[in-house]
Length: 505
Image 1 (tube, helix red, strand yellow):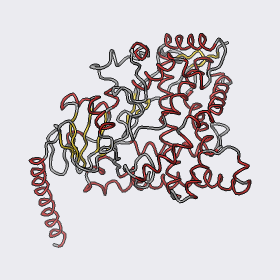
Image 2 (cartoon, rainbow, N blue to C red; image 1 turned 90 degrees about the vertical axis):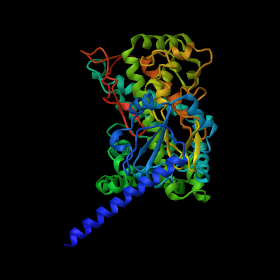
Image 3 (cartoon, rainbow, N blue to C red; image 1 turned 120 degrees about the horizontal axis):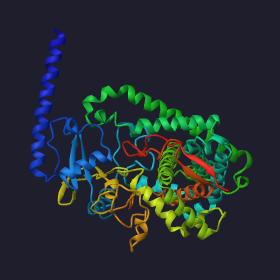
Image 4 (cartoon, rainbow, N blue to C red; image 1 turned 45 degrees about the vertical axis):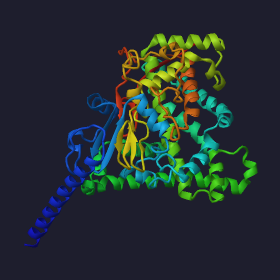
């Protein structure tokens, strides 16, 4: 009897919620001029029609149907998707302050401590402070010059390791695995003055596994239904429990094996005997001054592990695959290197600015295979205007940067890998956002500061590989697979490429 009464009460409550939602929705729609979009149902909005998979290609299909700005009501969340250079400029530049905050979700709240990092914090004083603290040790020309020799050293080691593997020149290897170790060593030398000796290093294996699991859990579309519709959130308990466990293990690893070890070294030897400061020393200085807390330190390290290492690695793998699949492009890169530097002269960081074709290959890789195709989502804290439409407060704003860079209205044969397109235009299109058709790092206040590291590291790595190897698909294959796998924000290669790398003599 009691159960039937409770069920009856539950059904009445649900009926009241539905009626209220319809009433409130009608009131709002009369007041606001909202962007076009699919018909939204009460409570569920467009979720039943659109589903969880909001990848760049699906959103492109919706843009073709509803226009360059459209609205998706996904449960309790409003998603505004913009797909034109004009609207992108409005969101990222002209109204950069209004749309300068970040939305989070139930999973990113866990991995960032509800915005204690830099990437996912709201726009305001905390973000400004974190951006300033991270810029000095990571994102300046001085840092590039301080660490360029370390970058070149790690790339040289990777090249030698590939040369020493006999199968690399016959059946082929997944070069990406060695490049992953290289990228970790580049960033961990910058962060902690530490490196890992091999791919079998137990600490590296543990770190790589935890970072990989974090990326898988955060980038999956599986949890969207619970994020969009709070009444379904209880079904996410198991998923969120795993996220919390992975988060705790990662932060403990960062703290115990890297941050505390650096503190111990400084207290034992004295700060002055450590030599030139690495990034964590600058960040710990900010901690000592009371500018940030212990958790902020951990979340800065968390951001770098994901935002700097993995995204650069994805782009490197895409670039390598396209070079393998286009022998003519490989030859053009090699010819430019030999002409500008001289045969047998290894490329260094300062050389990258003197090699326009290699730079064009990097840019074309970022255009066709953008690592963050929707950029990191923006949010307006208050109700705003965009393109003559009213944008409700706390809407999630997605800039479909992949479609901006792959729309045939603005690009000739966008589906093809053609580096020359970046050489032919009289007004050179750069990756820094000087043209709103090409925004691989975003632009404006919330743009990715890692551009200053990513571009030279990509050019150096691809240049050295082409200089040292004839790169080709494995026996029996004419090309390597460039199928893609998209996530909440990410785009990476679906199957890691097996590549034959024959040393050049």
